[in-house]
Length: 502
Image (cartoon, rainbow, N blue to C red; front, side):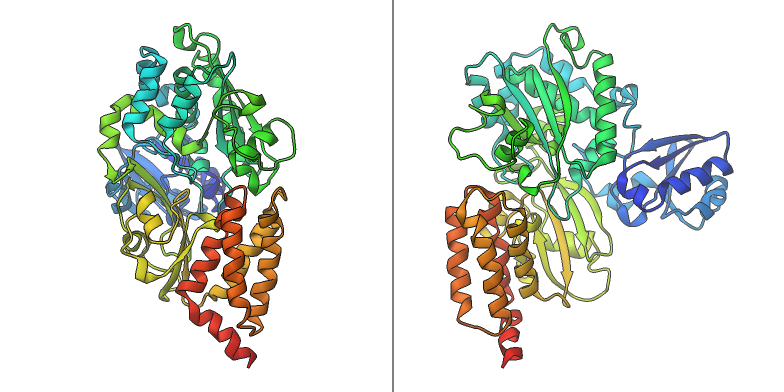
């Protein structure tokens, strides 16, 4: 008997380790394979038992369910996992192996298509590799949505004896966990993507800047790098090609602003994590002043499937200028939270009402924040907005890292606007005045509004405009999105403050 149980952080937090111990006791002879999570967090820990080549799911499992699961009589039975509605409706490209394979079994990785993209890339020139990424339409999945191929082209063309690939794994946005799930569930795809990037632009060294709050991801990635190096995937002679690329895992110290690429580079160099003025761009003068590709985890982890299946295959999914798939991270007050990978174009309403099943409380949805703590709070009247970079921008929102946090009708949006300003004030690196001082003044101004001072509202609007236009990076520049969206879409919550004061 073969049993699969996630070693993903979310599954562990929900009791997966106790379930594994109970399964070992109930079936001493069974082979228990630890995997990543399938992304259905509401039924974690998910136990999968292979019977006649089909993996049958049980969940959410408890230690008390172990004996019945092994016997096949558990009332937690879900049926074949691949036939579950959540799984069948997805287009899993980046996450195709997550939850399926043992994350640290390189042979398992290869058996499921791993390294096929790298082997194809090794037969190409650097320019051909860059052109393939351009054709795919892949854009930065960390939030900015900048075309990945253009960034790679800039580094490819830049003169320099040493170039670098830096993976931004400092996933700090609220309601986001796709980076962590990839690193814990399929680390070799990130490694393979970084190697392809290095060969494409002429870089021989890479770094993964991984947030300290992800100890499991750090452990899995560190071990995966060792395994890849031992197998010749990394090193002076990548898969016998004569080309070199190696990489290291570096741990961040917990600053949100280090998710911004120039702050990250400063931190990686051992300096204080503050934003650099641009230009020069990191693609020209990045890590240690050398040409550097800085890409998000999902961006780099998607590269192998593009080379395995071809750029045209990947570009065939999506809408408008948003090609390929988006990894939706559904969180907050929802009945079904988790990760869902699908082609760009699904509407916000489909995600919240259909996939997520509405709120966990059963109360009406009031707002959804898309794109992390700097994303706009969107009301149900915007639920027809398709999820794409330009489409969200036209709808007054921000796609960002594709995290969605749902709130029900009990939420006070004035308080949420204050939280956004307070978050910015706490996390500001202090480099520029609009962010450092503006966020503090913003908290004070919202407090005045809460006390019934209606004259403070125009002042808040003016302050947000200053922060948006004058801040050096997205922290100060995007904080006005949640603040002003709360003012615009939920004016009653601001009016009530005045009424209460009177």
